[in-house]
Length: 245
Image 1 (tube, one colour):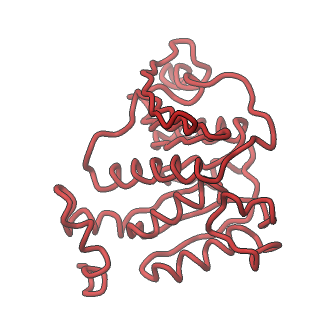
Image 2: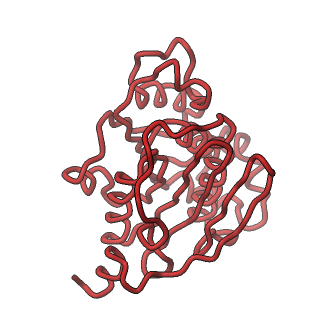
């Protein structure tokens, strides 16, 4: 049962068709993994906490730097030098005391990714393709949803991956992403909010997910373009998994 403070806090979202108290209770009981506490992560974490997602595991190995502050809105100048996950936990739990944030200050690697993800739905807020492929591997092998977002300058993209139903990340992307990708602060805010929207819809069980579609945002022209994406029958990850290899 929701408490009186929870009913008051969440009343405006619970009146959305299909949400109600039952949907809010689903959020309260939910657990989500957010991989990355940077620009994308700042927006994702803020709005998942605001919605009342009960347990959030956030993983990041970095500390707050001055150069982060054009886009990583969870942090202030006073946080410089602190672990991002520790600063994020403090702020998010103060913002919404109904939730629990598990802060893991660790780099995601081939050796630990399965343990770190466990059975949590995965939100990809990373800034490199190598780690994204590791998250994709866990999602495919454990049949977990993966909510992907990426940014570059004024451009961003997002899609939702449901193993066995949609293309996986390796079906969609090839190649590598350079370090220190240019980014305008507003871009991860927009894409992160789209990712958080997808997570909330998935957990509550409402709306239509961004599955089989790659949403591309162009901030210069202020346009959204939707690209249909299909499974690659020779995909190294999901085709292999479907064959039981």
